[in-house]
Amino acid sequence: MTKNGGCKLRFHVQHAGTSGWYWAEYSTFVVADETSGYQLTVAGFSGNVHDSFGPYNGDTFKTPDQDVCAAMYAGGFWYGSYCGGPRVNAADHWFDWPQLAVSFDNLMYSQMWLQCAL
Image 1: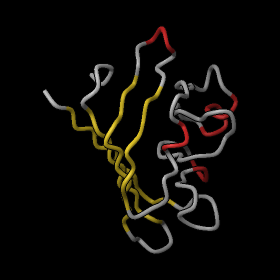
Image 2 (image 1 turned 120 degrees about the vertical axis):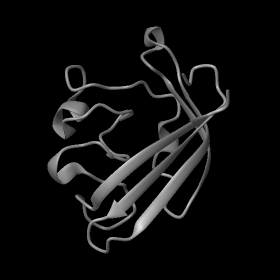
Image 3 (image 1 turned 180 degrees about the vertical axis):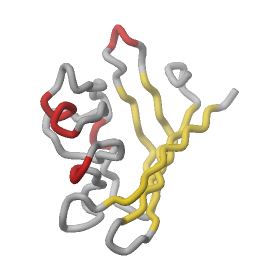
Image 4 (image 1 turned 30 degrees about the vertical axis):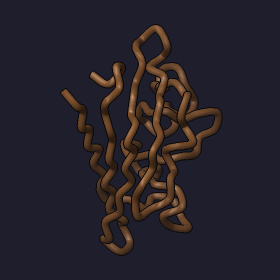
């Protein structure tokens, strides 16, 4: 769906401590095919929270059966070369958007919205 371009991605996240809502949008969002490891192309950040997903541009998708970060967080994502970054589908106390708060487990809720041109 995204590999030919023309898609944007928006995150909505709710902070657990304040119940405040935050968003991050990327005007370019492409996930390549399986042969590339579902390599991520993401750019064009805007939002009312720090750009915590953009630094993972070029990374491949990691799953719990192949990556220590994905196994620790109990959810697949583009984790990069270290276990930081947004963890919007992680389990338990790892559910996090970095730089949103000073501690981990700072999200109550997350949504990812994808919009692609036809």
